[in-house]
Amino acid sequence: MIELRQRKEFLIDFMEELEEKAIKAGSYQIPFLDKMLTFMDRPDEPEILFPPYLDTSKNIAVNAYAYDEENNTLDLYVVDYNFEQNEDDLLTISMTAISEIANKAKRFITNVQSLMETIDQSLQSYDLAKLISDHIESINEINIFVVTNLYYTSNKPVEISISGIETVNVQVWDIDRVQQLITAEQGIETDYIDFERDYGEPLTMVLVPDPVSGVKNFDCYVGYISAELLAKAYDEWGQKLVERNVRSFLQARGGTNKGIRDTLKDPFQRKMFVAYNNGISTVARAAEIEKIDTAENLYKIKGLSGWQIVNGGQTTASIHQAYKDGINLKDVFVQAKLTILLVNEFTTQDQHLLEDEMVSRISQYANTQNKINKSDLLANTRFMSDLEKFSRNIWIPVFDGRKPESKWYFERARGQYMVDINRRKRGKEQTEFKKQYPKDKVLTKVDIAKYFMSWEGYPHTSSKGGEEAFNKFMDLNKSFWKTEGNSQSKMTLSVYQKLIGKAIINKRVQEIVEEMKLRGYKANVIYYTVAMLNHIYGDKIDLVEVWNAQSLSDKWDDVIRIIADKTLAFLKDSAGDRNVTQWAKQEACWVQYKEGCSKELSNLI
Image (cartoon, rainbow, N blue to C red; front, side, top):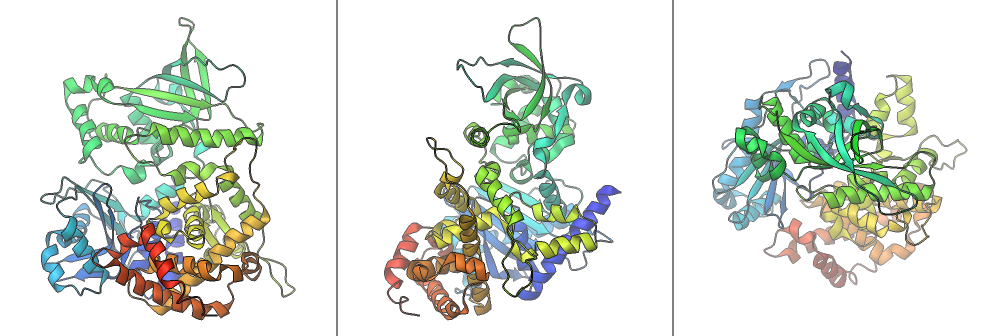
């Protein structure tokens, strides 16, 4: 009953926010996809097709795409939005229906040559068709994302094959998956797993000797864990144990996952698993440990707080899938490393900084099989925590004699805002919270990064997607969270106000671009327009004044319109035969835009 109530409340909040955006956009599919994409964390930011490609006679549909040239990976997104979805019925979708929707995207690929002859060359869908046609021989992996506002209750993998493509994965992103992801990202650090009580077997590990004398910041243990225990723990704790599996584990078709599953199915190979597999690397914030008397350096790990698997997500998820499929995991063992951080609430700020950096590096360096998102790893840095604190404490200024009543809300973890709302009783409590933190004042860490990077002259980086923008953003602001020597920059009110000022400018540019109804490449146009605005007129715009007014002076509206119009024309013309979206990701594109168009746009005010 509690789970059902939570689902209903989550759907109400999700759809309520979507309704507001759909009214402005005149469409449900685009704002729905846009919102869902904020949870999906793909390496490349998808290009949302406007209008979406739809051919009902041939049963073909695509709503967005992204192409990773480095890894020859193509992502296609197809939206299934049901207007009848409601909190009373919680409508579901079957595996058969999911397969039919995924095949709509597949047919875009298999019919690409004929589509190139029929699609208007001015449309983004033509760019997609041409990209596929040009790279079809080199594409080795295709990911089809079915994005739906229904509930996919079976959760079984959908199998699709495309001739000539080595790996085809289908991911289903439904409302339930988003709710699970949001829940998983809250309160991970406080969870305690009792191995002895819950699973009947503690971990037995060897403490690695520490040759360094003085204050220790961590203890490191090495050993093994039974595959069955790992599977049971994941079955119970799910994404709280390995949150990234919500996004990264597709199905046992490609590379690593398929190899793990095949090994576990074979009775002989299964016993060799520990020799074949690289194992898992884990971290925890605290542990209940007991020394085993019979051995000098052997310890029993009875329980762990904040246990996280930072490398071995595919291994864990594949073992769990084998467990769910009834594969016998007896005598299967996984080598494991456990790092326990020796930092508590009474430590100094510098030690907290050391912990932040240590967790990030362990996660980053340990992972070789699967890319980890640094935006997740760095969410707990002092810089991010300070931004969160400022947003909870600094009121938005008012100048009409009234007292301030609202604040910006910085989401350090995805879905934090919705979780905060649902912690309050429906009615007066939630209404007061939304009044204090309006929905249009919510900023994610990726939002902050893209807004900052665009203003600072890196529109090509913002065009690459949230992950790339966040990495660069954190690097440019490392003085706020990394201790270099004995110095570290202090997060101040002015720094916070200027960050929000950049967000306000970006949002205003977005509003104007949307009002202009330009055809295609909206995100790229916004990033490049903001960058050019600052490049030419930045010395005339005071970010603290923007914060105080909570708006950019309307004297800039016409300037923005002219720059935006020029930006779109430049992106299309300068791309030539290249894909416009891919061209916009290159620094050369920004350099060429600055050098070729700055003079023409420099006398607009």
